[in-house]
Image (cartoon, rainbow, N blue to C red; front, side, top):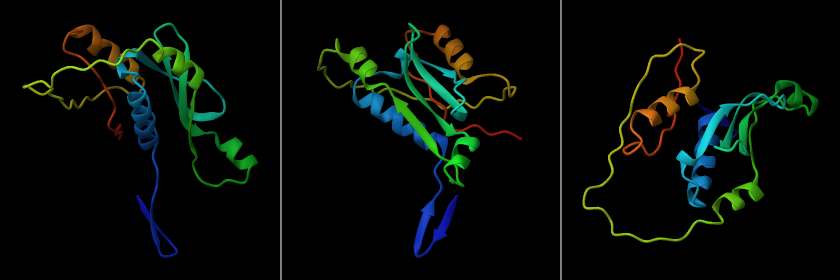
Amino acid sequence: MYKVHGHILMRKSTFYELKAYVENILRRIGIAQGLLVSEKSDNNVFDKAIVLKTRAGKILVEMGILSHKLLKSFNIDQKVYYAELDWAGLMKAIRKNKLQFQEISKYPAVSRDLALLVDNNVEFAQIEEIARQADKKLFEACRTLRCLSG
């Protein structure tokens, strides 16, 4: 994960780091994770990518690993993680947000980690949708920490 480059210890980036940055941006501008649906991207600019859409189908974010073919045409020999945010669409999505204040809860929210063993062809979006349908009152957010295969 870490590589020495000259006198500097450098850490390799991952898709999940990019995803965390994008999710932080969305959260800070007032877009809750539950408002967007994630799907696999079919954009040929990427080797692997996801899109974040509104429930109406408007693509607001597309992020992933740029294609090897594209990188080769620019003589880039390492992975490039790329995210494209539709700022006009994002601003339109939050324009009706009202700033509200409320008392801090005496009982803080509880988050739970859940480890699942699933087939490789099961998409994260499918698992997330099933979880949302199970309990709409208690379920607020769902995110992938890491995917292990073997």
